[in-house]
Each structure stands twice: as C-alpha cells, then as structure tokens.
Image 1: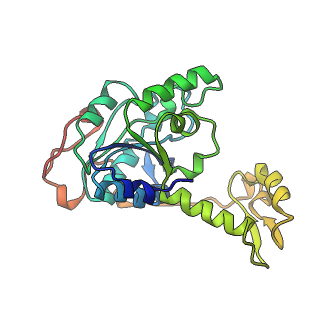
Image 2 (image 1 turned 60 degrees about the horizontal axis):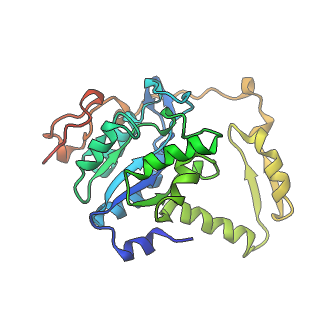
Length: 271
C-alpha cells in the first residue's frame, strides 16, 4: 500500500489531489455536534497544502436519494474545515458540474476546495458498474492524484472509493495508514492478552464480525447491542459556538475576506 509520505517524496506541487475524506459528521438542527471526522483528515490535508498541492476534498454526508438535498449539504463541514485550517476553503455546489470545475480551476497551489455531497449523484452508490464507472470518470477529470483517507467508507463499493482509485495514481492518507497499521498489529503481530470491544449504534449488525474475530483476541464483547433504542439515555447537547452557520473562511486571520455562502460559492478570498 503506497502511503502519502511516498507521494509527498515524489512531489505534488501544483498537482490536483483528490482527497476522499469522511466528513459524514452528526448534525442536529443543521448544526455539527461532533467534528471528530473532520479533525481526523486534517493531517493529510495539511501535509498536501504545505507541499503545494491543489487539494479537492470530497465526501458523503447522510443518505440522500441520489439527488441534491439541502439537509445533507457539505457546506457546514466545509465551513468547519476552513476554521480548523485557518485558511479559506472554496465550496462547490455540485460534484462534477460547472461549479466543481470552476472551484478546481480557481485553486492556487496550497489551496483547498470542497465539492458537494458525492451521494447527490446516483452514480456514487449505484450497483450498476457502468453507471458507477461513468461517475468515477467524471470525478477523475477533476484531479491528477487520488488520496484515500475516508476510513469510515473504505469498505464501500462506491464510485469515489472503489472505481476512482483505479483511474488515477493513488495512495493512502495518514488516517487509513494508521488504521491499517493498528489492524496489522492485532492480526499479524499479536501480543496477548487483548480484548476486542464492539459498540455503537450499528453493533447488532456487527455481531457476525465479532464472531469471526473472536478466535484471535483473548476475549470480545459488544455492550451497546444489549441496549434497545428505548433504553438508551437521551443525550442533550448545546451546539458548540463554531457550529453556527457562517461563511468560509471564518477564522480570525481571514475575517476581512469576502464572505462565502451557499449562494456565492465561487467568490474567492484573498488576504
């Protein structure tokens, strides 16, 4: 598996690099309640930015029905990414249409653009190889290199995960490389005893996985599967201050730049 460090050693200055991230963050009333997945891809994006790449970030969010749905827009994650990077982030209101191409064309080395939710295009999740491949071809036209760093989606046979890497030079980002390294330690260089604990909202459907791996660890358990939805405590959160709808870029260092909203995605900021 080629890693991003090897890619950086080859040089990416001025290259268009497509980063398949996982920005599928939880939302409540349109506000991000946990930005962990955005933070997880930051090391990869920052390394590419520092190396002078033109970075195109793509992801899914939720399960739209193969068509645009404002409830699943990536605008909020794009705004949060701009805050975490401390730099402007261009936002395209489509995935492979004029807005995406304009956003990519407008990038200078070291700048970042986020394209709209990949699942707004039916080809992303299609079970038809031809339809999925056609969408992958359109995505490939945006970039020179592919970096996979969406660990939460890497098991999917989707256009941006399965088909696109076959069309571009590709490598794994820091998040995927780290996760694969951990899995190797637990399967190839086992130090006993160790315990596997499975949990989360999907743990009932993960029980077959726990059975298949239970021969490897000393013990395994799945706690969340014992809870019915009605018995789980209801979490109450106040929305963090950064989750309010703002324009990219909202960081203090670029506060004087023009505001970018959903209706003005193509306006660029220079500070």
